[in-house]
Length: 305
Image (cartoon, rainbow, N blue to C red; front, top):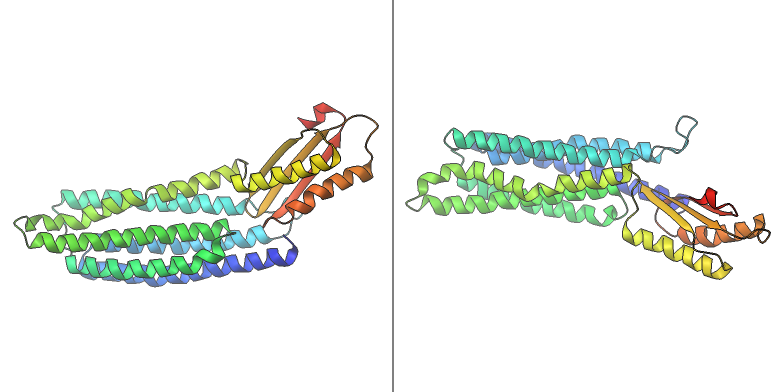
């Protein structure tokens, strides 16, 4: 990825985060106000869940700016780690919100249920679900090359699920009120919260797992690893080189690749080594990342371990 492409990617990422922040503010405030008026814990939870995303989107914006800053004497490798750190924080915060929702729902059930209007639950669920789907669709395309933006899309998808669960629960509550079991409808609101938490619990775990994988310098995604191996294999075949040791990891927008060949004595000079480097690095420059690659030829096997 060249400088212009990298700058364009950063600008697109920040637009996604800004749109997500503004959209979350509108939906979150509306949900909390509606929930307080209708005395509906499910709506208040959905609003708090969405408003929590505002702080997380702001943190993601800061992480994006930090990651885009140039390496310095104090941070010679830059601040790309800010991206997975922000993703982990977002996952942890969403997980904490879900835990709070479970505790509140259980307390409501123990207290005898909620007087929430089933009509309010249904209406809000439909409107908020449509709104969340539209926002996720708007963000999806520019989020393909950004971990931070993908985290925002995951959050909006989780919000969509929550809203649809509320809508279905509201419809079920309205039907229940017309039966002999109508008295149980007071438990629909807290039960909806528990169902929504169960459905969305995997999403924050996914964010935490992906962020920690990068922070612990795990291997890049399989499709990226395959591109790296293909580039190395092509160069190996062209220059008659032995099978090398390949190490790679992705940290935010940066891709680190290290390739070590153990070669015979008196057959290679610096110019030939540079040709091997270009054969590999030029291919990897096509990837949508800030590439930091080290391709080494050595006659000492102990230096390639």
